[in-house]
Image 1: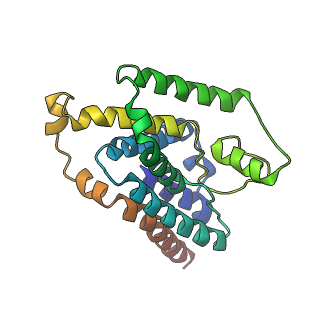
Image 2: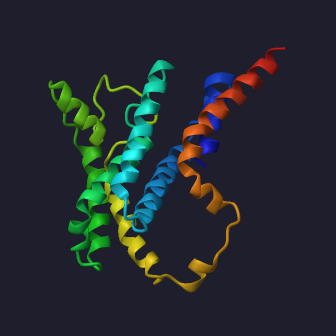
Image 3: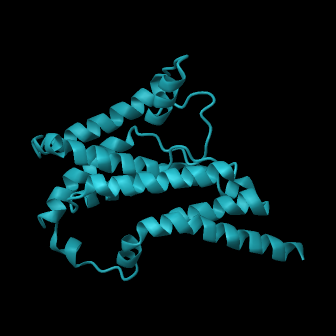
Length: 221
Protein backbone atom coordinates (compact mmCIF):
# COMPACT_ATOMS: atom_id res chain seq x y z
CA UNK A 1 0.00 0.00 0.00
CA UNK A 2 2.83 2.37 0.85
CA UNK A 3 4.70 1.66 -2.39
CA UNK A 4 1.53 2.16 -4.45
CA UNK A 5 0.75 5.38 -2.59
CA UNK A 6 4.19 6.83 -3.33
CA UNK A 7 4.02 5.71 -6.96
CA UNK A 8 0.84 7.77 -7.34
CA UNK A 9 2.55 10.74 -5.65
CA UNK A 10 5.38 10.53 -8.19
CA UNK A 11 2.89 10.42 -11.04
CA UNK A 12 1.29 13.65 -9.85
CA UNK A 13 4.49 15.44 -8.84
CA UNK A 14 6.67 14.54 -11.82
CA UNK A 15 4.48 13.26 -14.64
CA UNK A 16 1.70 15.83 -14.57
CA UNK A 17 -1.04 13.39 -13.56
CA UNK A 18 -4.16 15.10 -12.15
CA UNK A 19 -3.90 15.84 -8.43
CA UNK A 20 -7.01 13.79 -7.64
CA UNK A 21 -5.06 10.64 -8.55
CA UNK A 22 -3.10 11.07 -5.31
CA UNK A 23 -5.35 13.27 -3.19
CA UNK A 24 -9.06 12.43 -3.20
CA UNK A 25 -11.73 11.68 -0.59
CA UNK A 26 -11.14 7.91 -0.74
CA UNK A 27 -7.36 8.12 -0.28
CA UNK A 28 -7.70 10.89 2.30
CA UNK A 29 -9.76 8.47 4.42
CA UNK A 30 -7.61 5.40 3.74
CA UNK A 31 -4.21 7.04 4.28
CA UNK A 32 -4.54 7.40 8.09
CA UNK A 33 -5.80 3.81 8.18
CA UNK A 34 -2.71 2.62 6.28
CA UNK A 35 -0.41 4.48 8.66
CA UNK A 36 -2.32 3.19 11.69
CA UNK A 37 -2.00 -0.37 10.41
CA UNK A 38 1.74 0.18 9.88
CA UNK A 39 2.11 1.35 13.50
CA UNK A 40 -0.13 -1.40 14.88
CA UNK A 41 1.89 -4.16 13.20
CA UNK A 42 5.09 -2.56 14.48
CA UNK A 43 3.68 -2.63 18.00
CA UNK A 44 2.71 -6.29 17.64
CA UNK A 45 6.19 -7.13 16.31
CA UNK A 46 7.80 -5.46 19.32
CA UNK A 47 6.36 -8.22 21.51
CA UNK A 48 8.51 -10.71 19.60
CA UNK A 49 11.75 -8.77 20.11
CA UNK A 50 14.11 -8.50 23.05
CA UNK A 51 16.03 -5.69 21.37
CA UNK A 52 13.51 -2.95 20.76
CA UNK A 53 15.91 -0.20 21.81
CA UNK A 54 18.52 -1.49 19.35
CA UNK A 55 15.94 -1.85 16.57
CA UNK A 56 14.66 1.64 17.27
CA UNK A 57 18.17 3.06 17.18
CA UNK A 58 18.74 1.46 13.76
CA UNK A 59 15.51 3.03 12.52
CA UNK A 60 16.55 6.44 13.86
CA UNK A 61 19.94 6.21 12.14
CA UNK A 62 18.28 5.48 8.80
CA UNK A 63 15.64 8.15 9.51
CA UNK A 64 18.40 10.74 9.94
CA UNK A 65 19.89 9.56 6.65
CA UNK A 66 16.47 9.99 4.99
CA UNK A 67 16.25 13.51 6.41
CA UNK A 68 19.72 14.38 5.12
CA UNK A 69 19.01 13.11 1.60
CA UNK A 70 15.53 14.64 1.32
CA UNK A 71 16.72 18.02 2.59
CA UNK A 72 19.35 18.06 -0.16
CA UNK A 73 16.60 17.16 -2.65
CA UNK A 74 14.52 20.11 -1.35
CA UNK A 75 11.79 17.63 -0.32
CA UNK A 76 12.57 17.44 3.40
CA UNK A 77 11.26 14.72 5.69
CA UNK A 78 11.90 15.92 9.24
CA UNK A 79 9.67 13.51 11.15
CA UNK A 80 8.34 10.77 8.90
CA UNK A 81 7.20 7.22 9.50
CA UNK A 82 10.73 5.89 10.10
CA UNK A 83 11.46 8.57 12.72
CA UNK A 84 8.11 7.79 14.30
CA UNK A 85 8.55 4.00 14.47
CA UNK A 86 12.13 4.32 15.71
CA UNK A 87 11.00 6.61 18.51
CA UNK A 88 8.15 4.24 19.44
CA UNK A 89 10.47 1.21 19.60
CA UNK A 90 12.96 2.99 21.85
CA UNK A 91 10.17 4.42 24.02
CA UNK A 92 8.60 0.99 24.45
CA UNK A 93 11.97 -0.64 25.10
CA UNK A 94 12.64 1.83 27.91
CA UNK A 95 9.15 1.71 29.46
CA UNK A 96 8.03 -1.87 28.75
CA UNK A 97 7.94 -2.90 32.42
CA UNK A 98 5.52 -0.05 33.17
CA UNK A 99 3.06 -1.03 30.43
CA UNK A 100 3.31 -4.71 31.38
CA UNK A 101 2.02 -3.87 34.85
CA UNK A 102 -1.31 -2.65 33.46
CA UNK A 103 -4.10 -5.20 33.90
CA UNK A 104 -4.42 -6.97 30.52
CA UNK A 105 -8.22 -6.63 30.47
CA UNK A 106 -8.01 -2.89 31.20
CA UNK A 107 -5.15 -2.16 28.80
CA UNK A 108 -7.17 -2.07 25.52
CA UNK A 109 -9.79 0.20 27.11
CA UNK A 110 -7.04 2.53 28.32
CA UNK A 111 -5.26 2.62 24.95
CA UNK A 112 -8.45 3.17 22.94
CA UNK A 113 -9.44 5.97 25.33
CA UNK A 114 -6.03 7.58 24.90
CA UNK A 115 -6.20 7.20 21.10
CA UNK A 116 -9.57 8.94 20.95
CA UNK A 117 -8.56 11.58 23.49
CA UNK A 118 -5.39 12.48 21.61
CA UNK A 119 -7.32 12.73 18.33
CA UNK A 120 -9.82 15.04 20.02
CA UNK A 121 -7.00 17.10 21.55
CA UNK A 122 -5.43 17.62 18.12
CA UNK A 123 -8.79 18.68 16.67
CA UNK A 124 -10.03 20.99 19.41
CA UNK A 125 -6.81 22.48 20.79
CA UNK A 126 -4.20 24.56 19.00
CA UNK A 127 -1.30 25.19 21.39
CA UNK A 128 1.50 27.38 20.14
CA UNK A 129 4.60 29.09 21.48
CA UNK A 130 7.09 31.77 20.53
CA UNK A 131 9.92 29.47 21.64
CA UNK A 132 11.36 27.68 18.59
CA UNK A 133 12.24 24.51 20.54
CA UNK A 134 8.76 24.24 22.05
CA UNK A 135 7.20 24.90 18.63
CA UNK A 136 9.17 22.00 17.15
CA UNK A 137 8.17 19.74 20.05
CA UNK A 138 4.51 20.66 19.56
CA UNK A 139 4.84 19.92 15.84
CA UNK A 140 6.37 16.51 16.48
CA UNK A 141 3.66 15.72 19.02
CA UNK A 142 0.86 16.55 16.58
CA UNK A 143 0.18 20.28 16.64
CA UNK A 144 1.95 21.36 13.47
CA UNK A 145 3.23 24.90 13.81
CA UNK A 146 3.56 27.53 11.13
CA UNK A 147 6.96 27.16 9.52
CA UNK A 148 7.32 23.45 10.32
CA UNK A 149 7.38 22.31 6.71
CA UNK A 150 8.25 18.92 5.34
CA UNK A 151 6.86 15.87 3.60
CA UNK A 152 5.56 12.64 5.17
CA UNK A 153 4.60 14.41 8.39
CA UNK A 154 3.96 11.67 10.98
CA UNK A 155 3.35 13.09 14.48
CA UNK A 156 3.59 11.06 17.68
CA UNK A 157 -0.10 11.44 18.61
CA UNK A 158 -2.21 9.35 18.42
CA UNK A 159 0.25 6.82 16.99
CA UNK A 160 2.06 6.06 20.25
CA UNK A 161 -1.14 4.66 21.75
CA UNK A 162 -1.90 2.64 18.60
CA UNK A 163 1.60 1.19 18.94
CA UNK A 164 0.99 0.33 22.59
CA UNK A 165 -2.35 -1.26 21.65
CA UNK A 166 -0.34 -3.40 19.23
CA UNK A 167 2.03 -4.47 22.01
CA UNK A 168 -1.00 -5.55 24.07
CA UNK A 169 -2.39 -7.61 21.16
CA UNK A 170 1.10 -8.96 20.46
CA UNK A 171 1.20 -10.61 23.89
CA UNK A 172 -1.85 -12.73 23.07
CA UNK A 173 -0.63 -13.45 19.55
CA UNK A 174 2.71 -14.63 20.89
CA UNK A 175 1.00 -16.86 23.46
CA UNK A 176 -1.10 -18.36 20.61
CA UNK A 177 -4.40 -17.30 22.16
CA UNK A 178 -5.85 -16.16 18.85
CA UNK A 179 -8.08 -18.52 16.80
CA UNK A 180 -6.31 -21.46 15.16
CA UNK A 181 -6.91 -20.12 11.63
CA UNK A 182 -4.95 -17.00 12.56
CA UNK A 183 -1.75 -19.05 12.77
CA UNK A 184 -2.50 -21.41 9.90
CA UNK A 185 -3.31 -18.75 7.28
CA UNK A 186 -0.65 -18.61 4.57
CA UNK A 187 0.23 -15.59 2.43
CA UNK A 188 3.12 -16.58 0.13
CA UNK A 189 4.50 -13.08 -0.55
CA UNK A 190 3.95 -11.25 2.73
CA UNK A 191 6.52 -13.04 4.94
CA UNK A 192 9.34 -12.29 2.48
CA UNK A 193 8.23 -8.64 2.29
CA UNK A 194 7.99 -8.43 6.06
CA UNK A 195 11.54 -9.68 6.55
CA UNK A 196 12.82 -6.96 4.19
CA UNK A 197 10.48 -4.18 5.35
CA UNK A 198 13.19 -1.68 6.31
CA UNK A 199 15.15 -2.22 3.10
CA UNK A 200 11.97 -1.90 1.02
CA UNK A 201 11.13 1.34 2.79
CA UNK A 202 14.59 2.78 2.15
CA UNK A 203 14.89 1.72 -1.48
CA UNK A 204 11.37 1.79 -2.90
CA UNK A 205 11.20 5.54 -3.50
CA UNK A 206 14.62 5.82 -5.19
CA UNK A 207 13.59 2.93 -7.47
CA UNK A 208 10.17 4.47 -8.13
CA UNK A 209 11.72 7.88 -8.73
CA UNK A 210 14.19 6.42 -11.25
CA UNK A 211 11.39 4.63 -13.06
CA UNK A 212 9.29 7.80 -13.03
CA UNK A 213 12.12 9.84 -14.54
CA UNK A 214 12.71 7.15 -17.18
CA UNK A 215 9.01 7.17 -18.05
CA UNK A 216 9.04 10.99 -18.24
CA UNK A 217 12.02 10.83 -20.58
CA UNK A 218 10.30 8.27 -22.83
CA UNK A 219 7.17 10.43 -22.94
CA UNK A 220 9.25 13.41 -24.08
CA UNK A 221 10.73 11.57 -27.09
